[in-house]
Length: 98
Image (cartoon, rainbow, N blue to C red):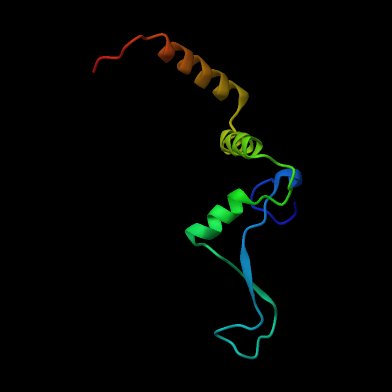
């Protein structure tokens, strides 16, 4: 999608609830169409529960959210390898004593 801060796969994009304002609240002569995002807890629930694509299931949405979180930070391949090695080394300890 164009003009996004992050890359978005359009097949999994959702619409954020928004309301339209016809005029500016501070400048009455400005009659351009404005969009305001609704940032209430209910609007966020609507955003996650009602994807634009109706064929998407709840499990697919959870999997997509997980993939999105994993892809937020991208690092060089050597850094990713080091992180994996550290995770493996730490998982070998049965218990950790401080």
